[in-house]
Image (cartoon, rainbow, N blue to C red):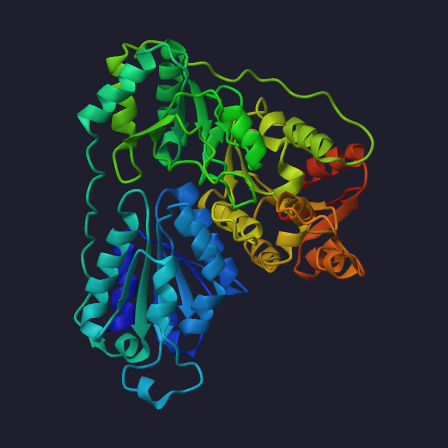
Amino acid sequence: MSMNGAQSLVKTLLRAGVDVCFSNPGTSEMHFVAALDEHPDMKCVLGLHETIVTGAADGYARMAGKPAATLLHLGPGLGNGLANLHNAKRARTPLVNIVGDHATYHGHFDAPLTSDVEGIAGPVSDWVRSSKTSYRVAGDAAEAVAAARQAPGHIATLILPADCAWSAASGAADAIEPPHPLAVSADAVSAAVDWLRSGRKVALLLGDQALMSGNLELAGKISAVSGCELFAPTSNRRIMRGAGRVAVERIAYPVDVALERLANFEAVLSFGADEPVAFFAYPDKPSRVLPEACELLPVAGVRQDIAAALTAVCEALGAENAAPPVVEFALPEAPSGAITPDAAAAVVARVLPENAIVIDEAITSGRSLDRITRGAVAHDWLQITGGAIGCGFPLATGASVACPDRPVLGLQADGSGAYSLQALWTQAREEQHVVTLIFANREYRILKGEMRNVGVTQVGRNALSMLDLRRPNIGWVDLARGFGVSGESVETVEDLAAALQRGFSEKRPYLIEAVMP
């Protein structure tokens, strides 16, 4: 049967296990859209802005454990999605971008949408290629998926010129098996075991796959035998946490708090995590948050076999049969009155459904969430990883596509939520069980604290106006309804608890604006 390049691309993606495409297409991608239409086994999800598309693909892959495709329109469309591609790259998320481009013969005419697509893609991609002919599209696609699936997860961007999409192709390509994770050094395992037997103050720093349940259990056994403490980076792709699971303490965002907490450790053994550093530079404060004399030993880097490393250390310690310390189910007391960050965290802990997926872009209002929700029912926790705000709504959307039978709770700062609230429309269209809690402090509150941290003490009208979200207040409930999502605004924690329970019972998108003093 005759086949064009776009058809060969879709068939190759499906052969390679990519069966979801988050899209915002344009003229150059119409043959790819038509090819997608021929395959009901490829789920296509429309986003109203490319930052929704890329962020949703990130959330999907974090929960599905495999890449989705995005469909983006030329350089400007790719550019619109860059912030959440940055977050996805920092999360080490597997993701395949399909970016349309002008026909190969049209580019030199310098039409208005002509741009350096490869140049735009480069900083947020681990693999970039522009297909040169329609006959190479399928092979390029197979290589793109293999590149995305390579441990620990990569961003692959395949640029599809329009004539390569509509011209004849020979057929689909077979999937390419990605290389296995790199082996762990026996010397690194031995050194880690020596530290753990030394009786000195040692921490395990767990990231990436080390934060998944089986690997967490191994880390817990190591901790039970050696007495080491377990930490995770400040921001993580996904943590499996809650009652019955091994607790991991996240390193605090504020530099002073992190420095004090880590001050007495003599060694940090890392599994799938980079050295913890301050988010920003501050006058008269260090960039590194580990003590100068602390040894950082990377037992397993992000490209290595993290599970094998933890298993080897566990066996060398004789900890295979140890009982890992797990979190007991324990809820905070029911708060009352005004909605403070601590009170809101307590409400979340109390009403969170079993096996929920929590999307955390709460920013300032979420500082106490990690501590207060630790004993809630078992759940997964996804965070903003690259610091580019506006990921919360899209992450929730993608996670729900990956796990349609699981409730999703989005914990969303109001300032960052305004970057990507169009995702509500996609949630409504897909009839997703997503409850969004807006922490409406009506300002960029984190920046007020950051001004103090960098030594700015004199703040006047102009500065404050750039940090304030009033005049007018954002009407979150009205905006949600405009996108087809029901919601309500609350001002007390009693009303917040009732609203969350209503939202979860709806089993469709629901938004709650929590007005904070």
